[in-house]
Image (cartoon, rainbow, N blue to C red; front, top):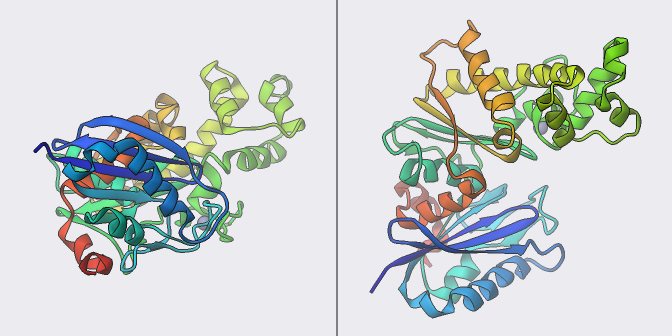
Length: 333
Ligand SMILES: [Zn+2]
């Protein structure tokens, strides 16, 4: 019998499901849209139908199922609770899948899954202190300290996008707070922050000719456009990117001072599509800073690209962290 694992990445827009070998290599990957309406079982039902249809022939060889989901969640019951970015905010996830397939289902939030994937299958194999940071629609993190995966009381540790990095509170965050990292540097919030900067700055004539200034006036700013124009050398875009990176660098310095990692792995579409303008600039900024009180870790982009959470889910199924298993009370049912 050849053993297999199933990994599931539950995101705001897409759910990805992969079948992996015993060594964690993806054999087949399928994607479905995250259901936008229904009851608390709709999402789990959609996932189990897809698994039956796509992987039905090998299900008896599947040893375990791992899930990395957008949160917050209650790990004891395997329920996602009040997820702001998923249209069905509260839903059952682990228990219905476990009952249906009669396999252990190991669940964690997406960034916690992400760091576990880096530890088991990715860049973190040789390290005991690893941080995973995603800069995407939002900003989030997962941490392993002295080989222990940090979880929090319900599994919602590391909402690092919501650390305060601007006490003047210039920008309001989607969570309602002021001055949070995510409000300045996440894909969803960059257009608002860029607009604020353009309003504050006394632009010179050259800057007013920038396509970014035109997009601002047309209410058509996007983070994609700002980074695309910065890559072309547009001065105003580069000035905005520099400003965003001040907040990214502050966020990374806080993370390093808090967790003393050997390695920070960076993922998320904003970072991965703009490695030079985001990851390289953050690394430079951290090295130039006088505010890091420990040694500076390696800061590297993930090699898993868009599959970080999926690889994390597979890693959870392959090698479930002991402290996580203790929290998953539904596993004992
Ligand atoms: Zn916030």
